[in-house]
Image (cartoon, rainbow, N blue to C red; front, side, top):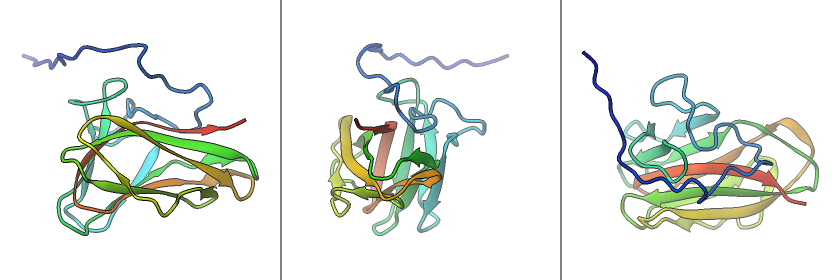
Length: 169
């Protein structure tokens, strides 16, 4: 015998799409060679209770999202996009759809080779899917060294979806 799970969700196919110029791998977390672990990213955590997993129950785009949980105050999760190529002095838009289990969960965006225009800013999540974005300028040309980090700075649980880095004209 086998059990099958079907999602009962109304999909809006043309609502949001992956940008054709997107540089990130697996932006909607649809691919995972290991169950629960998405391809195309690295995850670190500051303490053992923090967790990350692919979430098949809620998403903003496609069938999956990434669920990050930092259950204690001061615990943090660092999500890093696989290295992307950048060109010196070119601007890039980083965007992600996110929502928190409880409004008020905070995160920061940073990068090793992109000067993020508002790198000190903490984004405060709501309990509805919302697109968060910022602009960064490459400090130098790099084929495989550039990483983008999302660091959750308060306790809580959040979903991420459609994480993209797109070069601007």
